Image (cartoon, rainbow, N blue to C red):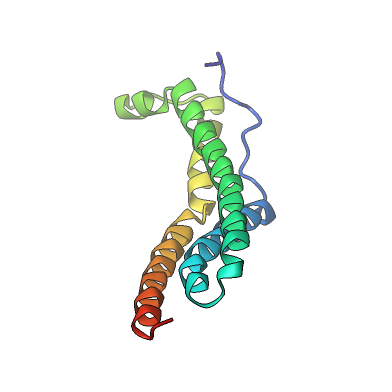
Length: 135
């Protein structure tokens, strides 16, 4: 850990957040599409799998870095302890807390989780229907 928090911690611009959100959703669609492709176009299973897994590698590396930055700031500034004790925060600590709060508030991970849930449900339903139809 460093002696002072990352003074350059800034919430990423919306286009970057949206780009990684799109990569996450596209990967989620690709992975769930595998179940349908297995029934109707087996030659597309492997390319779709590579696309989905490659996208997940990029998306989850991004999510890991964001979470690591948040946790590092919280730990380096001892924000949990200071807030629990009611201690005043320095300007640098306030900036770190502001970054963490804005980063969480602007994150679209809740929509991503909802999409993963809905797409998983749809993939299961599609598999059951296609299996019943003999495809």
